[in-house]
Length: 110
Figure 1 (cartoon, rainbow, N blue to C red):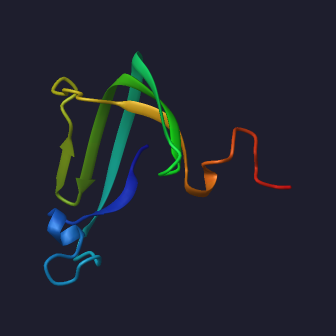
Figure 2 (tube, rainbow, N blue to C red):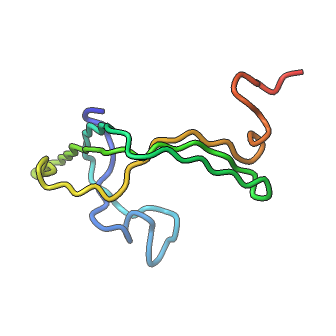
């Protein structure tokens, strides 16, 4: 993704409206962000299912690399491509809630 328009709120508390207006962001500056996320190298495969909580999924643990940058008027930031330490990266397919009982190709129509 390149040059995605968003707002820079400066601090997490401001972004989520704390302390005065929870859930309503404070003032932010117009900015753009770009990122390139790449997964690679299968480490393991896992499946999980819980009929009581109504979810099931198949997951692949992989390696990953993220390049990220942002800019706003007078300021920009770029991640260090060599300074990353990936603790966990997963790709998965999950069914939950009303979709729990559906299978691939089942669009729910009669």
